Structure formats: structure tokens, C-alpha cells
Length: 225
Ligand code: SF4
Image (cartoon, rainbow, N blue to C red; front, top):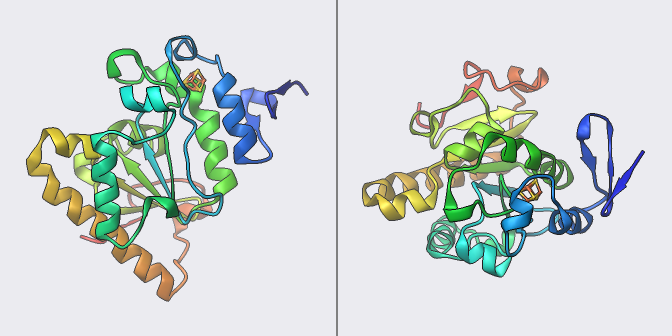
């Protein structure tokens, strides 16, 4: 079984890492797609190993590429503000992206790039085992919940996959460009608070879709109906 930086390449190209630090080292060395040659810094993600919440965005932008940290620009400030609004801080959540390296010019991720980078996000979720995954924007939605292809139709809802709650939300950057989305974004974060409070009071039931490992849209819990 061949070894990569801090991890093992398993059959089917899957990568297994013992912990987040080893995974981060591998990301910094990664050349699995062309973005590994154009980036300034890779951005594996940041946050506690035992975070209840993982936030998944699209890809690093210019400032993230320069600093090696996720969500450090204007969208990051808005994300911090939205988290504070529901009683959370950045220090409590793990923040990462579908792509760990910046696409030139902040263009959309290419399918082959998302596929090449997929093992890292899969491993992060497997290592952290969060209760809730916040999906920021349509690219993260397509990657994590394929079949739910419209963020406008599912934002603010709680969708279960393998007994983990996934809550799609508009990307904060979208609200910076379209101010009419700000109220929707705030409402969706309140949906996150509502879900966390509900989960704290009683263990979340495992819906039928979870047992099959699927995300059948018919097996979803919507907080807003
Ligand atoms: S985007 Fe992902 S797969 Fe591509 S080089 Fe960066 S870490 Fe590797």
C-alpha cells in the first residue's frame, strides 16, 4: 500500500490519514490537480478536531490563497457575524472548502478539480464526525449532496446523510453582491440555531435515508416546511 505525505493511498484512490494534521500536510504537498501548481498557499481548513459543526465553502479566494486560511476576506467577516448572531464563534467550528487551492481568477471549480480534491473533504468529515455540516453555496451543495442541485430550493433545510445533518445555505459572498439575500442568510442561520437547540434537547432521530446512506429528497426534515 503506497504512502503519501502522512497518509496512505487506498484502493480506488481514496486517501486515509490518521489525523487532521497529517491531512493538512498532504494538502500542502498536493499536486493531484493543476491548482497545485498555480496556488500560493493551499488552504486545508481550520478548527477544532471535535467541532460539532463543519462549514464547507467553495474554494479559497485571493486573500485565502495569500494567507493560507479559509474565509479571511469580506465573506469571512460576514460569516463571523452570522455565527455570532446565533451564539457561535469561529473558534468552535471547523471551516474548509470543497477545493483546498484557489482556482485562478476565482473561477468556478472544474469537475475534475472537485473530484481530485474530494478525498480530503471526505476524510475531514470522517475524522471530525460533526453533528452538522453547513453547506455554503451551490458548489458545495453539488459536491456533498448530489441530486440537490438548486441552493434556492433547499437553503435553510435540514437534510440527513449517514446520520449527519446537512444544512445548505447561500454562500456569504452571494449576499455581499446581492443585498436582498442578507435577510434570507440570517434566517437560515437561525434555522441552524433551531436545529442545534433541538438536537441538544433530544438525540436527533436517524431517518430512513440515513440507514441506506442516501439523501433521498423524500427523506428530509425541513424546519420551514
Ligand atoms: S485543489 Fe485539492 S486536489 Fe487540487 S492540488 Fe489542491 S489540494 Fe490537491
